[in-house]
Image (cartoon, rainbow, N blue to C red):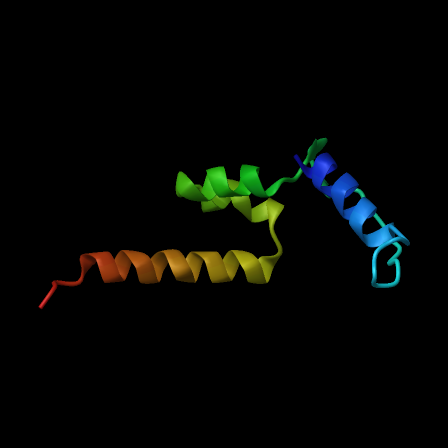
Length: 83
């Protein structure tokens, strides 16, 4: 899916026939963890399972803190009695 997205973006950004000036697309390699490319779907799957420990090496530290805080807030909200 990412490869198709990148091809489409390259086409639309670099096509000189469009009314806006072309933009050069620079594609960078995905980060890898233990030889496997890190993907958002991989991280989402771990988070859905509540496996923050496994997700920790895949995301920046501040992102992990944010996600843990978000999860704690959701749990607190779910545990609070409705009035």
